[in-house]
Length: 316
Image (cartoon, rainbow, N blue to C red; front, top):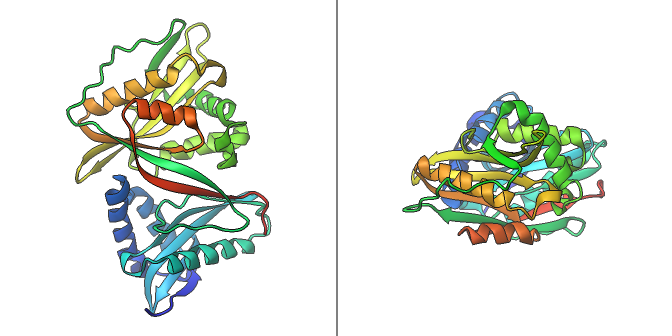
């Protein structure tokens, strides 16, 4: 096989990458039942204006692999890494990851690098990167009915997502995750302002389908209206049927023994069934054993193992 040539993604024209993006959309549907088309549209827009950082692997003038990254103040995030079926190999994926990591060196302000490359087919490691295992879980919803009769504990209420409480929800994410193991993977959880941006992006630019207000829920205290639980969901309408994805679930750390997380999961699953979803998916950090026990008790099963990488002391 002809050796591949890495070039800066900014040098690529849209027509060169169209076929690769179409294949990647298909693989997301096949592997995860996720609708990647909205993210692909954004990639197309940025490639058209030559304003997206990343790397393209060329076989002659054909793009057979690509990555992109974004720089946010002092952090860089590698958002995607994909090699086409025909060219997929451990060697080519490593070439793409290696050249992408090297490309980040052009930004001297970057002090931290993160990546959760869901589309890698082969194992990857880096001597200076911390690796965190994550699990992709799936629940078949065919012929399943989740009643909506689950009551909130006394003193609390569950209610549909309310845009007016987005700021309060962001504060909850900060309280819940700032000392949590997931803050080692995503440092946006550690700073309130960044947590607000993270939540806003999750709602407005979801990577899996479209944000669903009717499948997302909040738990509040009756006495003061404080948000103490949040579940955010998105929907994908794929060839095999609708899929409900749980993108975020968190509970105030002081209230994690009350069953609020289970309450919101029951509400979301009931709504997924009402909307005729065929399945529900989510991802969870393997070391978060309490969350994994909850999901598995609801019937979710592991379909894939993923890796999140962090270079906490960048540059190397």
